Length: 289
Image 1 (cartoon, rainbow, N blue to C red):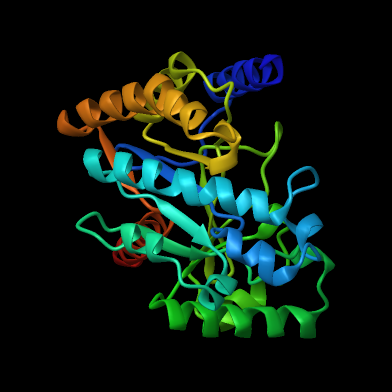
Image 2: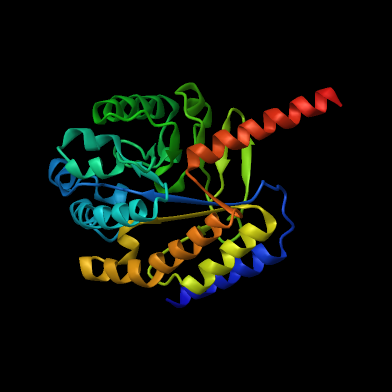
């Protein structure tokens, strides 16, 4: 809890002092969620051999168990508020029957991003291994009925960006930490890096989230929050408490700001597409000047 407090305090001071390097039409809230496993069945299929690729403390089976329980709770909350989010899922989910993915296909247009196939760190993959991983992801996601154009690197280990370009991805979430988290979108080659702003966990405070969103609105910057389902507990009761204590008041506040016309909700993909469109417009205006 203390680590979360100091992280939020540091980020608040940094975002308050740091000079913005971009300006949008209004504030933007982006939410991305890493679904590291998605189904306890994958833990059974992989027989524990993939555990360390997923979590150093929890087994792949247990992470999948938590996510099976938490995904409906978060998806229903986001859908109730009509807030779109980016859900980063693994291609290996194509090997199991998981009806919960149907929650992501509704009236709210969520962005389904790729999050590896086995959740391997891309910095540990050779070029040929990365090509194979991306091919497997594409085939797996196609079986699930998705065509991802956003990419969230497992463990945020950013590598092989040129291969993402060749596979048709439009954006990714870069590596962030105390010094690298930003309210910023940048172009890297043909890709957009939707920079992470803040990592959420069980110690996240609504008071700080409200302050961050106010900075985003006042300075017309993107505020990109991200988390795992297991960051908020291992039981349904713990996760429900976090949703009630943090997410419900935060989403309610954000919706009020949206209704007043000073905030937009974007997914990683929609934020990237609008950012690219603004760059093209600026370039066109510059040529005319």
